[in-house]
Image 1 (spheres, rainbow, N blue to C red):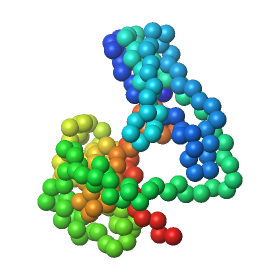
Image 2 (cartoon, helix red, strand yellow):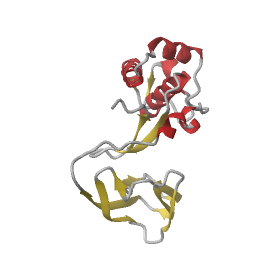
Image 3 (cartoon, one colour):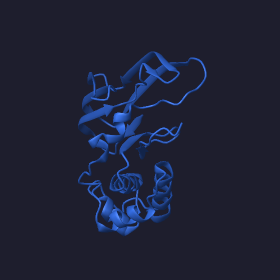
Length: 202
């Protein structure tokens, strides 16, 4: 990940959640490294509450650009399989409780009630399709402080806004959901999307 600036930037703090877990389904992480191009960068590693490896960098001064490089070797063992979460994820209050940016207003609550059905996966897919159709991508139309209700009412925004609206709809329908951000292959900027937790139908 390379960040280029128009002018020198001081005290850059970067938190990376990019190291694959040691085991995930049929995948096994063999080797990994996370480095930064700045010679004077300080780094620290820790695990979060979900067990993810967090790498934090502090760069005192970036004259024009800084690059973070992640390398990992992952093997696949056996046939592919879905990774199942424990049933407790379905009632995890962190995934059900609204936040300041994802609180449902009356319009979102009414929309969620109208579109929700017994099939929770189908409900999530309907929510996703509706958000995609309703909010037009428009850079600069919103900010990091824009709420889901504001984004839906305005009908314009970026990926973080569509994610917030999707989460607000899901949580209003008692569907556990969380905000995910990262980099898409071939794109420089960060992207946001949503993970919705539903019970295994098998």
